[in-house]
Length: 194
Image: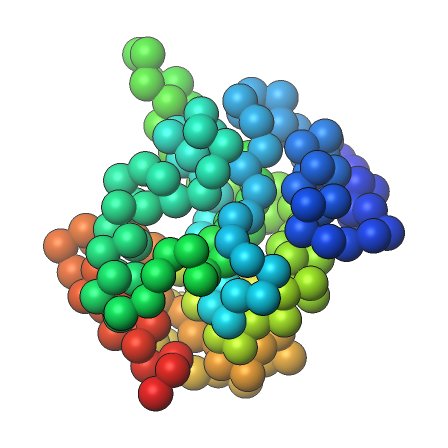
């Protein structure tokens, strides 16, 4: 397996990164995915929110957080009195990993090698944006950035020391518990700017 590092361009603007990521073969996930789903949002975003990987709808649309989890995330963002257009949304892994069940594509968690192969894209996005707050959504995103021993269940909403941003926190992924995610997500977002 190669790595996305082999595909990251020297000139690291978001448009050049997005264009280069579209041709990434840094792991085998590109073979079954419809397309690369790169991050979306302004280069001067104060907040970057990171999930695990695109889902089925994101894979088809080519945009992050446009499926059911995205709808919950939008509610949390609105509840925090913020605008989605001001936030940069991305995922640790840029291709949809799935298994077929009948005619449906069902999310399958990326393995450690796939995460490691894809992390150079996220590193490049964060280096370019230099956010004030980094919100990691779900265990996969949090562990990819904060280490495999990190537990969202023990540290959700806490601010952590990290060179990646002045404010770094982790919370549940919008798809993990729809009944409470939007409230907890909004609380975490609001706390980033108090």
